[in-house]
Image (cartoon, rainbow, N blue to C red; front, side, top):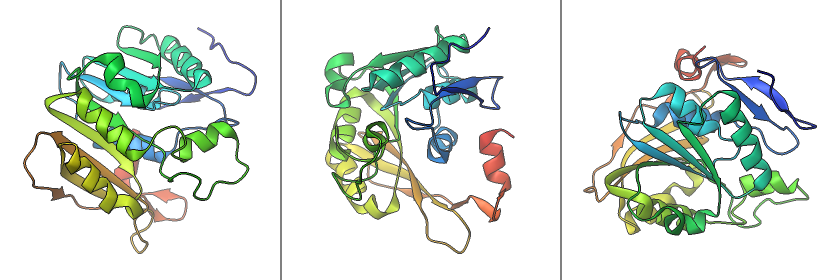
Length: 245
């Protein structure tokens, strides 16, 4: 069926299960970080998953394609993104598997109730407050900067949403790693698994993938690093596998 596109939108192929996603470059298109998170998150059969700050719904759609989870919910505060995500879900005929709701991450546990999900995923804003903020497009600014919620808001609400033993998956930036690990431990989401992502083998890491366990005991496994490019313009085999090419 034809996609219901609004002015400025485009329909992009995801190379998974024949799925497509509606995006608007003037707002904010998904990046590699969201895709890598869906390759890192381990979802089991029958599990219910919520993605906090879902944007255009890329993470729930890819997780539905890649994993045997039972149901996927996306929570997003910007109404334009909610509308885009819902239209992508409908275009892929996934209404029975994916629900997109408008709401504030800071109110997530009140909206859904405590211990409602087996898994929480999130690709939150990386930058604190107004750090590096210029005269940006407002939608992009909200995606990149902690203007509407903080790291602590995200982890606190995730801890409340998770069932005992539930898992938390997040992609973030290494420069905030010490803060992230402290906040996770503070709210009882014990860091259990970590993978650093390097653009090239001889560069510093620019992303970190983390798994936490609600109520877990202190012990973290640092996995082998993920290298994005073999050489400029050429992905490593592992990246191609994650994307599904």
